Length: 440
Ligand code: NAD
Image (cartoon, rainbow, N blue to C red; front, side, top):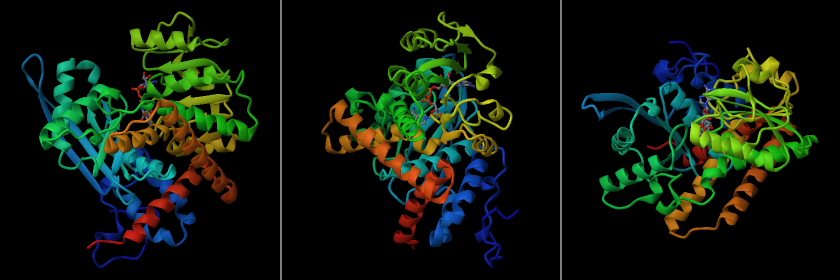
């Protein structure tokens, strides 16, 4: 087994202490490998806390579950599900659940680790976790989707709970799925536990403003970065990949602030309108048609042309690994705001940095969702609910403060905002780890 980069070279009598199990090692391609590279980049800035850095390179707990369901045609199908708790030093695990045919353990591990970083970056009292099922939910009926969700929830029920690990929506999961998860957990434990998941419908203990929160957070850090770099938002051109919860809301808020959304790409197509797309009309089209493809107010573009579109702001808000060394060179934007988790590979990050493109990293840019999830969880515990204005104002304040702190660290150390966010977050996590100590 090879030594992981950054691990102490001293051989241990116990053998395995300083080497990572094979499934944790960087393969340079998978999301977990990318995350490990990011941790290695910040280790030199961690001072005495670097002693604890291996903690960040191993998930605390990773559960793989078989999720069998009866399909509508009477056959039995098995799906693979995961729940990974990367770190719980600062509080219970927190992170979404993704239903996607390409979900892998490596991906869920990386997403859980990025949740640890994100929660620490905005200083909400959570560790990091993530879950997923390897399934294309679009091929399931509503009944099949409900049975899948309930069985998965029962299977991971041994490690989740309002004070243990709190799931939330992610790609292809939504308020209805959270309602089924909450109900299943509550039925299994014998009392209604609204705080076991966030992103629930408002009538079931959900929070006002949660649906828009991630997009609003993306917009908030975008506004802050524009102010700091002298970028005029009025008339700025915007390209958005992914027009779902995050991309759609972010595009709407930027358009309301006077920016022109000129290009959008999703899984159904790539569309362009140099004069600016009619965002409310596009949102309505997506609601009916399931994607941007075929939108009348735009021309279709070749998918590979999307990255080279003339624009000032680019928002990747779909899946990870989208901006790579193959397309980063084409990007004309001055500002990239990562709505998605892990959309930029480390090689692409370097290319963008060399071109002078400012990247607002996922671990701060899309933290708005988990911030309002935190508000939802607090409201569920106290059974006292806040107004939408109160929630949005608190969200904006947390995002602005967190962004200002990260910006300052980036200036101090002359590092990218990603490295700066990792420095802030890793210091908070490892400081908590150090104060708690090892038990037993
Ligand atoms: P969503 O399911 O609402 O939307 C996903 C979008 O991505 C859709 O428009 C879909 O068409 C598009 N897409 C999927 N595959 C694509 C492909 N191959 N090429 C181009 N577009 C593609 O999901 P979401 O909640 O908006 O999440 C998007 C990203 O944001 C994910 O990376 C997610 O982890 C991240 N994120 C979401 C939240 C949240 O609160 N929803 C919070 C933080 C981060």
